[in-house]
Length: 267
Image (tube, rainbow, N blue to C red; front, side):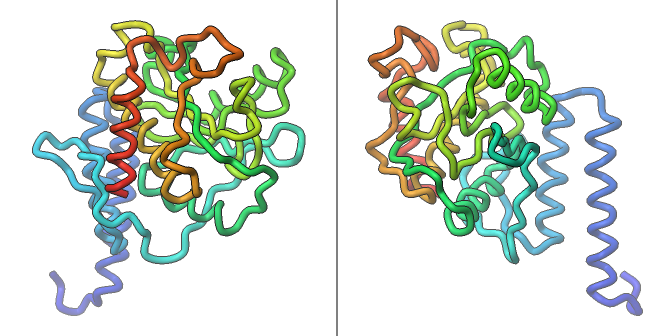
């Protein structure tokens, strides 16, 4: 360490190195599993430089999902919506677990709610499944889904949240009523988990497990910070107006609910 360099200068240099390293990982690594592990470590280093709390890392280099202190130090700045206005607006942005907590809290405090959500309904996408989205969602996929919902289905809104194995995507603004299930559109948030969990292949894959865990986490955060009762979780298949198996015949509701309630206590 050069004695003439101040702490502020060193911190700036570390931030620049962390940003450069993150860019190299995202753009120049070809093995996705190694890339994901390296990105997690890079994110931890970047958070440390910024004086933020760290998400615990297990011995295998994977995030444990437990957040000992998820509050950012400083002011949270939410991303711009991809599509604004009253004609089917979407947020269309991806969040890490810690970012999603901050975003839900920000929306609750800062946005004007145009509805009164009282519960959460879980879905799976069915189509696309994991094979069709090998790298998860992108912002372009969010725009494509908006086009499909609006032009093919004639909807004016969509599900609130999508999860893949890389994070939590906010689609429909949380402060506005969505469309996802006949009986629950007016009262419940919708969380869509990427995959077809009627299929053993999707359900058993490590990606499927991570996607379900992200869905559980999103539900728990909405309970904790958006004022949703822990007794108000259900599956799409519970809708008496549908015959769907959504979010998949392989998912047991009691096990899923228990896992969500456990996460509520952790966050």
